Structure formats: C-alpha cells, structure tokens
Length: 481
Length: 100
Image 1 (cartoon, rainbow over the protein chains, first blue to last red):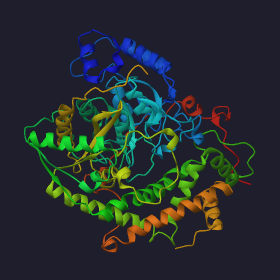
Image 2: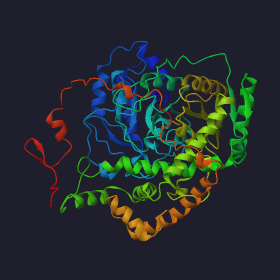
Image 3: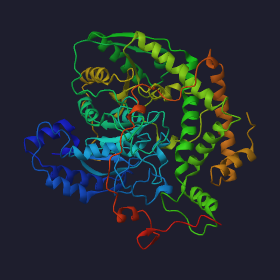
Image 4: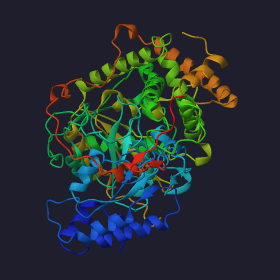
C-alpha cells in the first residue's frame, strides 16, 4: 500500500488505530523523495524527521497532524535548516528561528521532511526561475506545474506527502493547485501569521497550502489561523473551528460570463457550465454578473506594478552581509553590496526590481505606483459590490490545461490577460480563495476556483465541499512518481 | 514621468546596488513599453482619480493596540548564530570591512 497517496484524514485514522506508524509513513515519504527525479527539493531534514517519527507511539483522535509527514516551501524560516527562497543570494543562509506556521505544525506533531523549491524569491508563476531549474508537472513532465510554489505542488500531486505549505501573492498556490489536481487554499489576508515568511509583496502575501481534500484544508486552517503578536498584519479576529463548515443553507454564487466565454478550451468551459447546473440542482442560486471589462483588464498591470514595487523594497535587506554567501575582495561597503547583489540575483529578478524602483521614483509615483493602488481600490470596490448580490465568486481557475514547459516566457504580455490573472482579485481584496479539481482532459487536471468575502472561510469551505462531493475528485493524486 | 532610456535604467540598477548588463537593459526597455501600454488602460478607468490609493486590504482587526510588555527570551547559543558564517574570529562573526 502506498500511504503517501492518501489524504491526511485517512492517514490520521490509520495512525489512531495503530495500523501504521509515523516512522513507516516517514520512511515511505523519504523513499519517494529520493526516487523522484523532478526538481522538487531545496533542502531536507530526514534525520530529524525520522527521530521525531520514531518517538511518536500514540496518536489520539484530536491530534490530527501528529505523525503526518509534510513539506514546506523554502521561503519560510526554519531554524537550523538552510533557507534560500531558491535565490543564490541566500545560499548557505540558516535561519535561527522558525516561522510561526512551522512552530504550530511542530507543536501539533507534524513531521517536516524538508524544504521545496520555488520561483526565485517567489516572484514568478512558471516554476522555472528558481536557482535549481525547472519543476515540471507530475501528470506530464513536458508541462508546467506552475509557480511560484512549484515544489510543494509537485510533491503533493506526485504522492510524496499528503500536504505542503506554500505562499500566495497573486495565485502562487491556487494556480499550481489547478495544474496539479489539488486543493489549493489562500485564506484571508492576516488570517495566518506571516512571521518568518519571506516577504514578496506585503500587501498581497498570504500563507497558503496544498491538500488533497477540502476537509484536510479546513483542519490545516484551524491549526494555523490566529493572531500572532510577532506579525503586525495578523488579524485579531476570533478563530473558528473551520472544519465545522457543513450547512444546509445554500449560498448564492456568481460568475463572470464574459471571462468564461473567452476560454478557448471547450472541455473546461463545458465542465464549468455543467458544474453551475449541478450546483443549481443542489439548491444553489447561481447568477451571471457583468464585471466591467476595463477593471478586468486592469488586474495584470495593477498586480505587476504593486508587486514589483513592494518586492524592491522588501528585498533591500539582501545585501550579502546579513544573509547569504557574500563576496571576496570588495573595496568598501558600497562595493561589497554591489558585488553581492550583482552575483546573487538572477537577471529576471533584477529586471523586476528595476521596474519596481522606477515605479517608486518620486517623479513617477503618481502615474505608476499610486495609479496602480487606485486601480486596486476601484477593482476591490467592484468586487465588494458583487459580494452584495452574491456570497461567492465561481470561476475556472485557469483557462487552459497545464502549459508546455517549452512555452515558458518570463517576459510581459502586451495585452492584458485577465483569463490568466483573475485569481489576483482575492489578493487585492484580501479574500479567502480556494482552487479544487473540476475534471481531467487527456489525463491532465483542470480546476475551479471559489472566492468569498474577507473572513468568510467557513462559507467558502462549505461551498468547496459541495463541489468536491459533486465532482467526486477528492484525494486526486498522480502517485508513484 | 521621467522618460525611459538606457541611462535612466542604468541609474535605477545602480541605486539598487547591482550591475545590469546591456542585454538586460534592452529587454527592460521592451518590457517597459508593454508595461506603460498596459498602465495606459488604467488611466481610462472611469473615476480612477477619485478613489483613494489602496495600501492594504483592510485596517480592522489589526494589532496596533497590541504593543504589550516584551516577553523575556533566552538568546540563541553563539554556535547557532555562527552557523551562518564561514568567516569567524573566535566566538564572533567577522564582518566585511565597511569603511574605506
């Protein structure tokens, strides 16, 4: 039996009944990591994981994560484990503290096996810009898994671990989840502490995660959510038991038909409308909402200007002195930092920083950074208007099957592409948003996404559970990779 | 807004403390052309100049009032901190020379 193909819920049940040990689970996961030829890992901590797993003898009913192996995106601080965010400028950096989410999982008895690769500094969506190369899709290695949380997504999709953590600034958990046939969840901004998460764009970043079922996602949220005095953007709003989400009251959902109609993949379009009909038959009201096209077109440039500007500022501390390998033979401080940053960042990251820096110049702010911030407000105002007539937004998570690796480009598109970028709506507004599998075409998964108003995680999970029941795609895994 | 050209972008890179090769600047000039074309869409949004810039998703529930007493914590052992550097002098991190 391949345990790592199961959900956390199934593994937990086996552990409680003593039908398997945490050590056996950990050994199988390590074996699968070693056998996997995809570019998934940055660092591992197998010895510590095995030592912890061996100590776990009894698992109680309410110890959901105890003894369960997991992986973590390499932009979370882990005490004593090298953490590079897949950038050469952080090679050799060993944090001296754990991120809050790592502490919580540690306290819950989850078994960390190592760190997964990502697009450099989480600034990418292809899974190809990390310093260790391209991460591919377990369903077809000629295709992308997407990014930036590429290693975490590929690991869960390939049956290496039952869950993994990522981070989501524009769609960095939810898009790879779509391409990997997984549940990908980004909670409300501030719902989970970001202490110890390397900042990309502070006003947009959220901790997120990959699981193989909606229920597992709800349990993970219940564990990780909550106020943290170490993160000043952490919300003090009361935490609920998010796994208690089932309700007979059906929500009113909406979708943007102009967006769905623009999708060229007929199967994705057909299955989306089929889901709408099934939801109606289940008691949901589903409406077509006309979201202004100019605001949809504004999503991509707004996201790029805000995220590049915030990233430029957030990464100014990467000077080669406080973190990373540094350089030899520098003449003075300026020269040292200049050489370290020239050597440490890839060309793509440098170009993004220049765009951010240019947008923040005093002479340019009104026409670039502030205009993007105003567009964000206008987009969010319209989204909130939508939420006055519907409880949730339902859309295809991606307009295509996972794209071919050979099609990857790190350049810009001239035309705004809201089909590929609409998931950023949830980051703009800070809303919870979840992607889950909708179907398969030629053996490749495609997905649907749900977004609900800020801090309505329970409602979101209830809708997602109904969809999971309708599709029957709980526990989807490629496995054996 | 400042006109975008080779010199301006070179200067931006210099302010950001890294070298940008000419080939990358050429790429950037093309990317800026596309970006500014896209930003032009934003200027046509009805009422765009009447809304306030949005800095964060919300300001409720945040923790401005949570500045409480510090909790005393034991500092890390020196070996943990020293694991981050190859350059050490005794029990201390040897930092690069920063003054000319």
